[in-house]
Image (cartoon, rainbow, N blue to C red; front, side):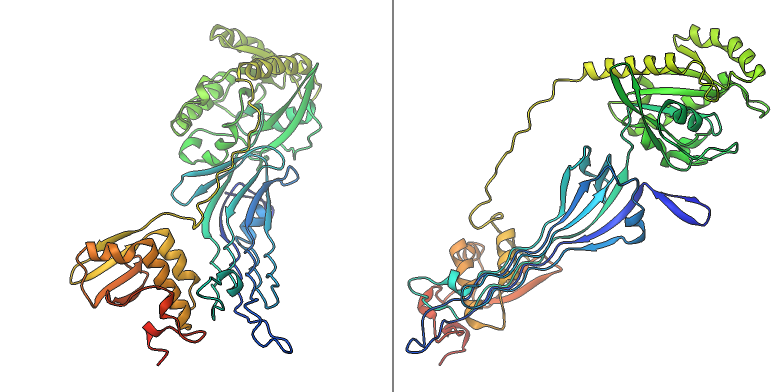
Length: 466
């Protein structure tokens, strides 16, 4: 959502971000040559890793506006390897600062990460691995490979970023109820204040100290009847209440609008909060402790109205505070009451466990195994992370590289699986997905292995050597 002031957008709390990590650099196929040593062995080095795209919490970031203006972000590619065992440089990571409380979702709405706390990081797109150079591919039988592996492509994805304010207490109420003035009086925050609806277009945060307790207060933009259905500023700003442990109803005791009074305003806002509960699961807003703040008692009619409605709120079991943001009357008592509620909530939380680093080494070849699916008419589809990765690493303009791919697939068991699936000579074998695959003709009588090697860059099985 974009809130505007004047003619330019200044606050965004929801964006779709298109990210692409860097591709890995290609490996190098090189043979060391020097005087009196024309064939000194393979010395082609590996390519560099592609850069990651990383989201990092930065408390200096106030909104997602920058990503609304520039939604496409890409990290640098890894550099290719070179001869002389010179490994290609890794691509630079792109670190994107996001506000505290940013939730990362995929386009289906699944939560990928909830970023809370300065410096918290999430790798949203991982860079591709660099391809192996021919020095790394050399074996006892393949002493001087005439090929290298290509770098793998980096991740590319679309994600949704949503900002949910991180505050202990949320001030809720109708527009012009005095929430901005109240947060300015309670803290050092200096929000824009004026006497007209929807002055507050962004959630303002203030830090309040009461005794030994320090807590944050969010001045949530004004709600109106139907906000949970999208009216006014709507539910776009209701998400900023979700993280708050305590709610404070700020009620205008001096409103000039006919048909409005603190009791009816309270009931309307409570109705909207209950309607929004459906999206919150096990921490509904209706279950959170709240206080009633009868504001603007510095106005004579406002004080009279506050004294009139106070018994009704207390009969509902609510704590009531009569305050004036203008004269600061009642603010000390209110701040200490909020602090006590925040401390009670914090004490109810389970003790924080020490952070443990869990290391899960990837398999040597990475990825999962494969599956062979008959598609009819002597056609078979091979799926699996390993075969697809190996395809991406293969330079199909180099016969020796293609032969090396065939040997890897055979060692993985693809040849045996095709035979078990009743594939016959000349079968069409697709590796990848039904809509995106590379097609091979399967010849089971062609034996895999290094014995098929010809001169560098060729393979007897592929007709490049006679």
